[in-house]
Length: 115
Length: 109
Image (cartoon, rainbow over all chains, first blue to last red; front, side, top):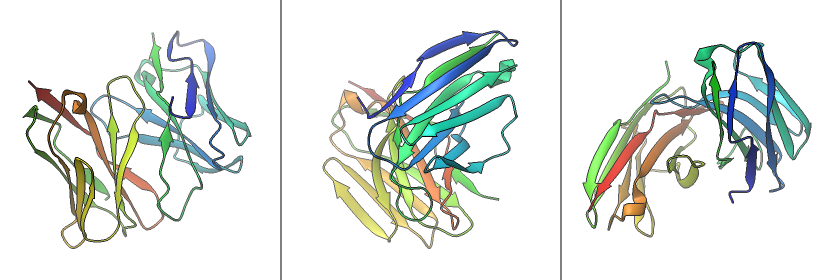
């Protein structure tokens, strides 16, 4: 158990479906992140939340919509996805965002396949 | 632009030593991280270097040379469980992490 829990671990969806990924941390961290991991590519930062406010959005398509209702929970709502969105979506948390050696604690990821 | 380079794959023998290199080009620098990721699992933090030199943690050591934009992760007394991907990430002047694509390490008996 890494302290960051992601559900579901695996998701298959059609291009017209709507689904959500959930992330939960009980580490008392103030910052939460969504990353996309594709095979043989660097991790891509999608969204950063600090104290429940979005502080970073790296030009992610609007078909991905994040939600952070409180400091322990983070969602990624998915709608009208494309096959190229198939990837491992990793959630992470850290004590703070920004300055300092912020060590990330990752969840095990949600493996998304878009048909 | 900002960039991290690390080898795609390496193979080593159980009990041996392996060095995984990472070179970086970033706008400013606020430290370098190494993470380990076993297949199907979460990446886990291994080390953080911000000053030049070698930091040792048991069988794992991490080295940094800021002037050369270079780091390496040294794994000693390799065990089968060390088979994993090793991710290098540099933090730029805005405290953004720039990630490498990871090095897949295969350990053979």
